[in-house]
Length: 380
Image 1 (cartoon, helix red, strand yellow):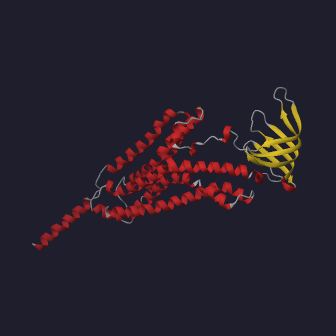
Image 2: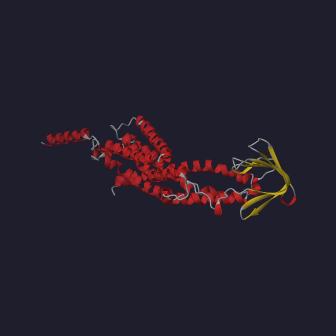
Image 3: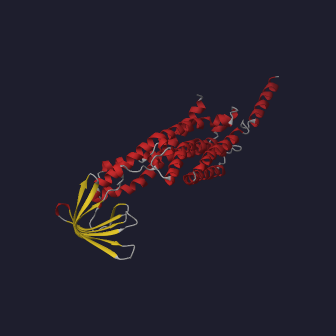
């Protein structure tokens, strides 16, 4: 490998690492703040919190890597231009493709890492995240029920407790259960106790009533009980299995799902195509950056207009990709547009790089010939 290639590759890799770690850390911190409440108010230990939140890193890193490479390409090549270092390469008659070759190498490495994250590490880590999240919710359900606070241990279930007595006894229980949207009900109990069962956490309520509106006549039906069990389980599907979200599935499970209806099938297929395409944006965004910087004569006065144009184009392409992903979820036949977006972007950027293949070095060669001719005349 030539020295200038190693030099540019080293300069590209350092900002990529710094930007990727910084952006991933910022986004990870914002996502982790949603789990901090489990430590502060609900007693979750720090080790479990760190383990759960760390499982989000692969999904964040996969998104951040192409953006980090784009920022690094803009910064390093613009710096080389402003510091006149590319003038040295210009004087050697290097083509734009030769100057872009180090960025190609770096983007190939980033793309490979992106595919490893996308096809294996992301579904593995996110599935573990959801499984651990379910486990924590079920096993820390007693901590989720706070005194004189309307708690929501699971979606569609709101629980209020007046106080806690000795030995975990709950006093003054009010529950609004809307998990069955067609038949919501209000449950009131004088006392109760949280019990863990094989089916999940259950609140055993003592002496109370269940209030429910009869939709046929609009009357309020009240059922009194001496003992009632309220299931707090988050997932109650058959066999204890839960439906895996698109981010949890491997590529074969996305394109060939056996447990999805038509609506969810579209979302899974859209996620599958996005997993294949997104790592390629490391190459796409890098080409956009270089095409903008190499689209004219080099200037030491700055390239801010080209940098602004490249940034706008990168944002536009990413927005188009997200819009197409949502469109494919509704109509899977539009998936070809996601690939066309990438292909057209690569083709247009490469055309700009290949056009005027050799950087203009006429002035340098002309001055060199004049200098040699002058030397010969002086010698004669």
